[in-house]
Amino acid sequence: MKSGVRLYKALVAVAFMAGAMGAGAQVLVTREGVAVTIDDLQVGMQRKTGDAAASPYARPEAVKITASNMLVRRVLAQEALEAGLDKNPAVQAALAQARDRVLSDAKLAQLDEANKPAASLVESYARTVYNANPKRFEAPEQVRVRHVLIRKDTEKAKGKAEALLESLKGGADFEAVAKAQSEDKGSGARGGDLGLFARGRMVKPFEDVAFALQTPGQLSDVVETQFGFHVIQLLEKKPAGPRSFEEVKAALLRETEAALVNEGRNKEQERILSSAQFDDSAIEAFSKSQR
Image (cartoon, rainbow, N blue to C red; front, side):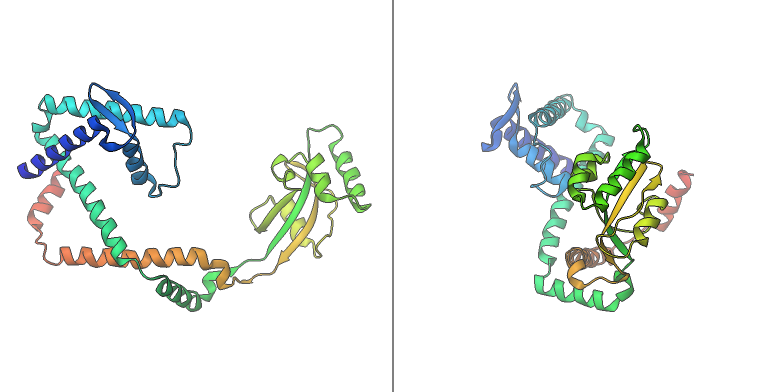
């Protein structure tokens, strides 16, 4: 334990020195020789998201808040060392566990990279999974529709919806009408398009009418729901059936690669635990003390 604490204190000291000097990176905030740099934020971001491209720091305010919090933590940690708080047994145990987490995470990252399979193997494995589990990739019946909504609290709402329906039957462009007059502003900006959906996604009166439409371009009568009065147009109808490999390929490749990498982690865990010696009496005694 003592050697681990000494190493951790050495790492902390190096971190303070790097913070004080900026480690060659742009310094964001400093206080009496303690600094927080761009590198500090990037390391923290990767630890949280695993993806340096998905930056939470697109706004200067977010950068300033995070840098401020890091500086406060760094200064408090330095003051804790100066006050000798690292000699407290509970703190020593927590420091050792924090060190273990950082180093083991680094080792796991190295292990995952080493176990990362070739793209050709991943695709081959994914195709095997796809062919062996056809029912898993069954898609329910789906429809794609667009609609115009007139909300119930609109004056003469039903009459307005009926007038829009007559206009559409007369040849008015549905997309243009939805953009100009639909009170569902989200779908209205897309010309009323709600995309493909299966049963259970929409309120029942709307869903029943949408799935009853048969021919692309077909218009519904005015449909009343809790949201108001709708006119629906069918754009596409997909019967239930298996999704093609290409439709599920991207998700299946991600799943397959993760499974193969995790298999490597499991083997490493088995290697370590195969020679581990458990003290069952100590485990039982500790468990009893917690009841």
